[in-house]
Length: 150
Image (cartoon, rainbow, N blue to C red):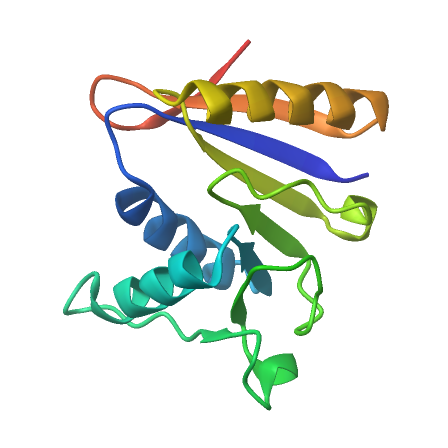
């Protein structure tokens, strides 16, 4: 069964949250697709993942590279799965793919300070529940550690 995790970003940026989540995914041996809603955003994330920390390396590429199937992390704007990922991250209100059930895990990161993002996340929550997915909601505590909420 597909597990869908909703990460409510409040007083924290995607650029701070995404890299550690991707690192944990790679540590677990998972292949990942990160889907945003525009090529410009994908290019900005690509640049950020190369430079977010001096002592770290996150191997990744965008969906246009010839060897996308060999990359552990692919950044995309469409719902394809060129690297046979088992985890899909959705950012910037990227829609839930129709074939979400092919993934072990879908991680939806949304900006809780943006009314449109909040509405889109609520709709995705409803859709995921209707499809029988195992859904959980996560929010950072005052120390910035993610806590599962009811």
